[in-house]
Amino acid sequence: MADESETTGAGEVRRADAATARPPRTRRIRAVLGVPLAVVSTVAVTLGIVQPAEATPQTVKRQAKSKGNHADGVRATRAATAGVPPAEYVVADGDTVSGIAAAYGLATAEVLAINGLSWSSLIFAGQRLALPGGAAAATAPVLPAAPEIRKHVVVDGDTVSGIAAAYGLDVGSVLSANGLGPSSLIFPGESIVLPLAGSSGPEPVAAPEPVAASDPEPAETHVVAPGDTLYDIAAAHGLTVADLDRANSLGGSTVIVPGQVLVVRRPEPVAIAASVNVQLTEEMRDHARIIIEMGRALGVPDQGIVIALAAAAQESGLRNLHHGHRDSLGLFQQRPSQGWGTVEEVLDPVRATAAFYGGAANPNPGRTRGLLDIAGWETMTVTQAAQAVQLSEFPDHYAKWEASARAWLSELG
Image (tube, rainbow, N blue to C red):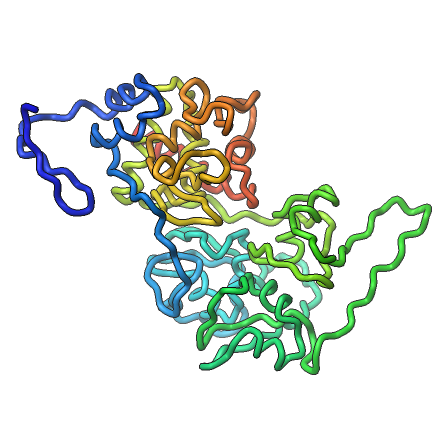
């Protein structure tokens, strides 16, 4: 070839011929779309649009100390004011959900549940989080005091099974109340929610009153039987998993145990945090440009590009994540097990964006459905359209990114 190159660490390529200019990004996007979709990833790397994805996702484990704005991690550095916590907290740089919860004497699971977050969710500076039990506005009606939530502060040597035994509780109930799994780790200083009132052991739960024959209202509780799953219970009662999560404060956990009583009525709509205003990093800006320029190349209207930007912001924070819920990966948290592509393919931002848009450029024809494959998406809200593609368990949280997505499109598009 005319210009020589040498390979450096982390898969980066340094061009020896600095005078050789790369074609504009839009022309490179069009070049990618003009070749068979099976080689999109290879061409994208060759053109310098993205760096080669790692072959295997990185496994993220909960540790006692961590860096970053994940839902779990170190405590917030800012001290909380005394008394009742505020109804809303504005996230600052370096904050974590567990740190915010600890600063106000709350359980991490409570804060996750009220904001529709999971343990792997990311939070951002400027994001507004609701705090359970927060001070209401002066004009708000006075409500009866909620029962006090019992907690146990973990000390060195504690285990979930030991804590459950000490309070006469079932291990599965303690795991579920805190959004933990059987293999989850706990650490000294962490607050564990104790799911039942009283300190001498579990209190009997009154059975739901039988429904009279003339009363068409369905029962509002479900006692978990062996083999039950949240998905089956939600489908049987015409609900979504997110409905059950909010109604039972599960904090994103899908762990349920036989004998557990679940509320199965549709919960009152939760107030979604106000619009998020996030300062774009260089990585986020590059991914936003890929989404915008791919949309332009496919002829997607501005509304469709806004939907794609909002979806990527909610799913990954516009980052090419090598981890996620179950096997979700990449910019749009697409799942290889659900037909979105191989691990390497879903970690390619260009290919992942093409899969989100779908239509004629869909690299997974017949396996996944993109935005352009959904009839009537143009008349849907940003949240409805994004959810139609992503099928998220928390479908109400795309809306808060709409204003930012429009600003990014105006700046970069």
